[in-house]
Length: 127
Image (cartoon, rainbow, N blue to C red; front, side, top):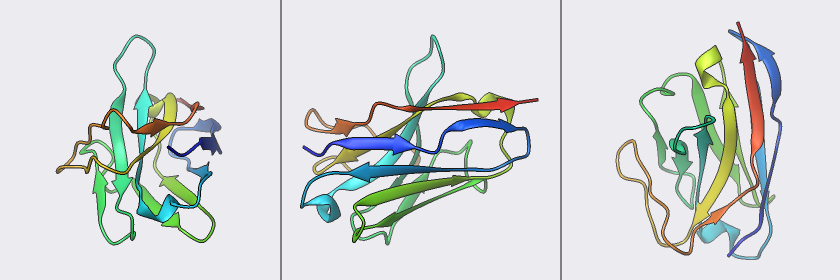
C-alpha cells in the first residue's frame, strides 16, 4: 500500500478555486489508479474524480464535471485536483485514494480491500 498525504484545502468564497494535492510514498506510485473522494458530515463518502496510472484516462462524478480537473505527476508521486466555480455544497473533507486493483467505472469508483486513503483535507466554500 501507499501512504497518502493531502494538502491544499481551505476556505474559499463561492465561485472561487482551489487546488488540492496528494503526495504518495512508495516506488510503485505509477502503477496505481489515483483519485479523490469527499465526505460531508453525516453522509457517506462519495466519488469526485479519478485518473488512470498513465494519466491517459480520467473519470469524474456528474456533480463535478466541467468544474474540476484531475492530473498526476508520476515523477513527483503526486496527484492533483483543480476545482473551479466552487459552490457551498462542495464543502466537505476531501480524501485522496489509491488502488492497484479496482478501476473506476463511469462516474463511480469503489476501492478494493487493499485500497489506500489519505487523512483528508477540509474544503469550506462560503456563500
